Image (cartoon, rainbow, N blue to C red; front, side, top):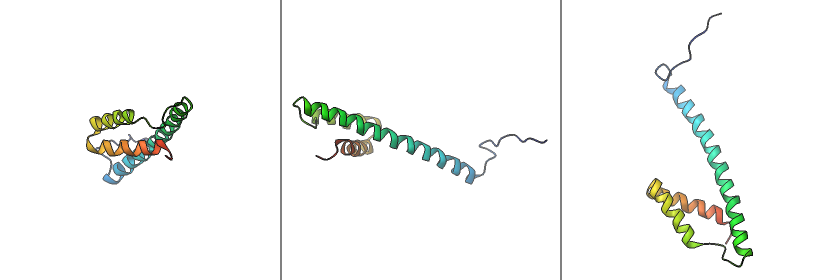
Length: 93
């Protein structure tokens, strides 16, 4: 029985490298989607609890903190990403 050593990145074809990278991106996207869904569920708990205790559904100063956090970590596109996450997490207003 003959065995061959696994291909290294140097030995792999560009097509194989791209296919592997795309598989990794797809797996990361699946994890990101799951985390966004989890964030939405946690946000719903916060909103329901706040409303039940007589507060407002949206806490604008908290949203500003989140926007700043994403902006600081990811630059201007981070702000857009945070806005999208906040919009998804708010539900219908």
